[in-house]
Amino acid sequence: MTLAAGAVVAGKVVAERAAFGIGDPIVSPAHGLGEVVAIEERESGGQKRSFYVIVVRDTGIRMVVPIEAAATAGLRRPIDRKAATALMDVFKERRPAVTGIPWSRRHRHYQQLLHSGSAPEVAKVFRDLLRLRSRKELSFGERKLLDAARRMLVKEVALACGDTEAKVERRFERAIGLTN
Image (cartoon, rainbow, N blue to C red; front, top):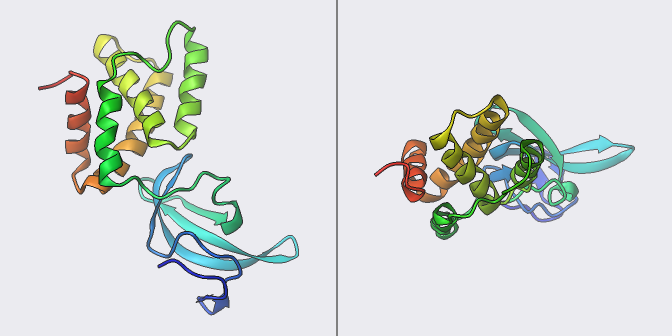
C-alpha cells in the first residue's frame, strides 16, 4: 500500500508522498531485507515529519527513517525474479572484484561494495569470498564480510524467486563451481 500526500495513517495525516507502503518489503544497505511496518508522523526539530518504521527480517532491528531521506539512506525495493536470475552472471565471472592490493584495502573495498546496497555489488563480494573460502580458511574479518554478504543477498534472492535460502545459496555455489 503506497500512500499519497494527505493520506491518513494511524489517525495522522502523512505530508510527504511515501514511495513504500505498509507491508512492503524493503532493502537497507546497512541492514538487509526488512519490511515497512508503519508510517508515522513525528515531531523532529520543531517540524512534523513522516517516517517509515522498518523491521529488519533477519535481526528484528526496528529502524525509523524519515521518508524524505529514504533515497539518501539507500532504501530500495527488493530485486525481482529477472534481476535475481541475472545475478548468476556475476557468479560466473572469473575475475575477482578486487585484485592485487593488500588485505586491509581489499577489506575496505568489499565494505564499500556491501554498503552500496546494490545486489550485483554485494554478489561480487559474496562470490569472491566464497571462492577464497574454498582455497583457504578465512580470517575473522573475511568471515564477517562473507556472512554480511550472504545475509543480504541470499534473503533478497530467495524472496524474489520464491525459493528457500539454502536452495539459493547452493545455486550460487554451483555457479562458481564449488558444488555439482
